[in-house]
Length: 293
Image 1 (spheres, helix red, strand yellow):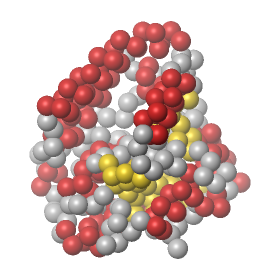
Image 2 (tube, helix red, strand yellow):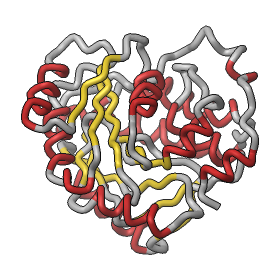
Image 3 (cartoon, one colour):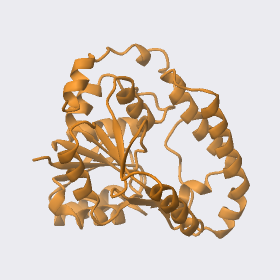
Image 4 (spheres, one colour):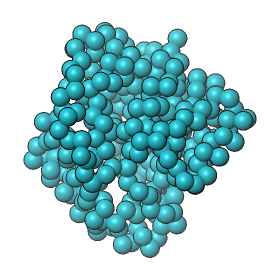
């Protein structure tokens, strides 16, 4: 039977990590271990995690000194012992049945290497309309469908697929590590599914990001797709529209929100741009074996 490890990268997340862990611990019968990776926090993040660990030994705190969510993710994934590795953010609240839906999916579908699901908002003035939008769009789609990329705040991957991809993923901190991993799988024919039952909620604090900073975040999305030679005009138009929409609603969001903004988890540039494009290739038959085909 599959076992589920859940990895939670965290940097100065004392305001959110406790509720994140509590939501996971409500489903502990379906979770083998919870690994929080502290990425140089200067607040009480570690203390909060250790408090949960004293009561729930399945919670583990791991330190990663090299700054960047990609390094925290890699460390957490490398420590995971479950056959399935879940990945959420420290402000993610998994919904009831999340862990069971992940395990059930991988037990049934040996033809997929990873899975994601719908993402809603909490603590945001736009939570209700956004939830209605997500409900409307997902209702019109199949219960299970193939997607090319998945968000790291609601993601799970076979450990065998991660081990095969480990030497291929980029360690650039100016790329989106979740998109990069997804596209590494995509480029070699491993599939990612989206299922309706794997629901989470995330903080609306991302919507408070000042427009100029958000622009860098969106440019990192384009940079990641371009790194894999998959960027095109349609993607550019989509991202420009996203930046415009964010700029328009940001002043009102700022006035109405009660939560604080967050530091978006990508840097504006990275000095290690030239080397990792030439990382050793992973043979396709290793990826095929990882998918369970």
